[in-house]
Image (cartoon, rainbow, N blue to C red):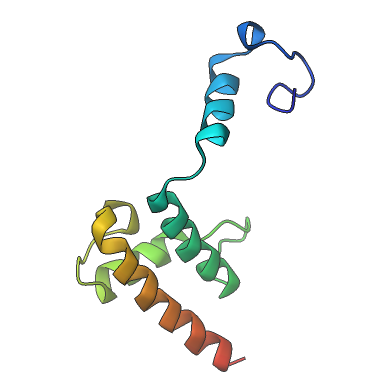
Amino acid sequence: MQYTNGRTTHLTDMTHAETNALIDSLIGKSDKDAMVGKILSMAHEMGWELSSGKVDMRRVNAWCEKYTKQKRPLDKIPYEDLPAVVTTFEKVYLSFLKGI
C-alpha cells in the first residue's frame, strides 16, 4: 500500500513505476549505491548543496575530476575504484568537521 499511496494492495493494480519502486526496495541498495550515497551525504553535511537543498553535483563531480585517481565525474567512476574515493572524501569531510 505504501507504494501506491493506499490505492491498492494488489500487484496487478500497480503501475510500472510503483512496481519498480517496490522491487528496488525489496532488493535493497547495491554496494555502489551505498558508497555514492555516503559521498553525497558527506557533501550535503559540508553544505555542498544548491538553494533547493539538493547536493551540488557539479561541485562533487569537479572534486572527483580534480582529486581522484580516475579524474572522472562520480557516476563514471567504476565500482572497484569507489572505496578509495570514499576514503579520500572521508578525509575531506573530517577536515571540514575539525574546522567547525
